[in-house]
Image (tube, rainbow, N blue to C red):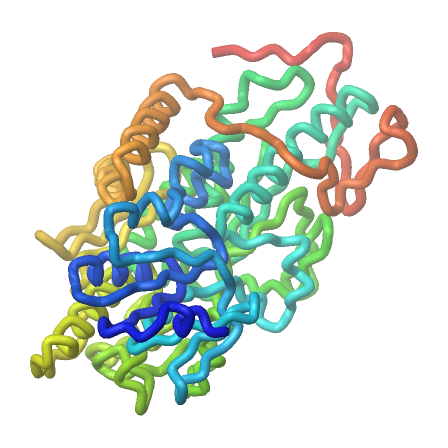
Length: 463
C-alpha cells in the first residue's frame, strides 16, 4: 500500500522533499507556514553542514558540531514529517516517489535536492585508496587515515629505527582540496608537534596535485596568487597541470612519474546524484538535471530540482553547485509552490544572488571574494575571520554555533587536541604489517629516511 494512500483522502496539497541538504531543508522550512503537508525523505537522519566537513576530517571539530538531526530542526513545524528511507525511483505520470522499502509516496509537488557525490572520472576503483569528502562518514575515514599515518610512523620508528616519509597527497586544487591540504599542514606542524617521542610530525610534506593550470579556478587571479602564497607559507607544495593517471596504495602516478603517499585524498571532481537520471528527463554529462528558469525539468511544472543536482544557467554561466545557491533555490521553490496554491500568477524566474566566495587555507589564512554588501578581495587573517563568522552564522541550532565557536577559540589559543580520535581499522593502504604485530614493520612504495633516528632517547620538543 502506498504510504500516502494510507492517510486517506486529503484536501491539502502534498509536497515530497527528497534530500535534507541545504536545498531540501531550506525548501521544507519555506513550506512550514503554507497550507501543505510536507514529507522529507533522506537516507540519513541528520543534516550535515558540509562546508565544515573538512574540520571534522582533520580533527578540529566533532561530527556532532556540524550535524543535527532533521527531526529536531523541524520539530516545531507541525506540517512537516520526516521519513528515513532511500528513494529508488519516480513515477512522474502517477506522481509517486518509490522507496527502497517498497512503499510509495504520492505527491502534488516534488522537490528533488539529493545533491552530488564523488567523481573519479571513470576510475571508481581509486575510491578505496583516495577517499573523497561529502559525508560525515567520509570525514571520519579521512581523519582515521591521516592520524593513523603518524601513529604507524611512531610505532615503526620505535621498532626498527626509521619510517617512510610522511607524504600526504591531495588530488584537486579547488576549495575542498585547498582546505584539506592546509589543515593537514596545520595539525602536523602545530597541533601534534609535541605529542610524539620518536618522530617529528612537522616533517610531514603535503602536496596538492591540480590538473588545470590554476588552483581555485573560480576565484579571481589575485586571490589565486594569494592562496598560493599562503599555502607555501604553510609548507604545502602545489603542482598545477599535473594530470593523475593512476592511484595505488602508497603512491600516485602523474603521467610516468611516481609520487609516494602515505595518505591520498580525493578532491578533484563531483557528479550528480543518480536520482536525477531516474526522473527520466534531460541531464548533462555530469548527471545534473537540465531545468528551466523556474527550476522545473521540461514538461514538469510540479517538479523542482534544487542544489547540486540542478543545471541552472544565468547570464551565460552555470550557477555553481555550492551551499549558497542551493539555499536560494530551496527558498524559491517553496515560494513558487505557495503562489501556485494561492492561484497567483508568478512569472518571475529564479535568480541567483551571488554574495561571494570564501575558502579557508589554514590557521588565520583564507581568501574571500566578497560581492555583497560591498565588493572586495580579502586574504589572510581578515578573510579567515570573515569566513569563520559567516560559517558560524549559518550553522543550524544555537548549540552548534556555541560549541563550534568555543572549540575554534580554544583550538586557536591553546593549540588544543581537538577531536583526534582514531576509530575502526588500523590498516592503512600501502602500509603493510608483516607477520606478528611485534615483528618488524615494513612499507611498500617508500624509501626510509636516510638518517635513522637515534633510538637512545625520545625526541625532545622545544618551544
